[in-house]
Image (cartoon, rainbow, N blue to C red; front, side, top):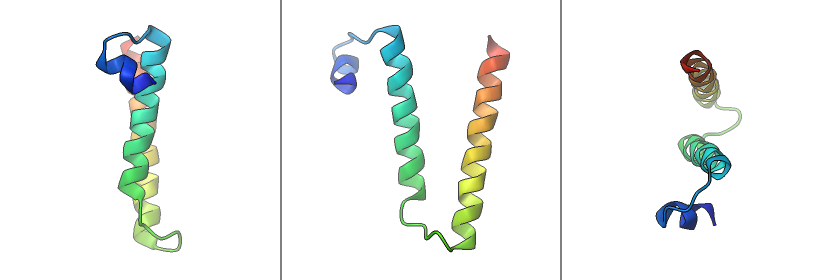
Amino acid sequence: MLKLKELIGMLQENETQRWEVIKKTFVKNKTLKGLGGNDRMAQVVALLAQFSEGLEGIKDVLKN
């Protein structure tokens, strides 16, 4: 429903924030898809993704 509301321009502010979180999570999961849990490279990529999210959070706080 959020995607439909976005397409027709009817998202409210709280829905926009939730939709952005969903899209970020989707991209992260798609990036990590297929990487094995025991694979060292997969673990490094996962840690870098988490680090990047942390930096984004800091950036958002500093903007406000």
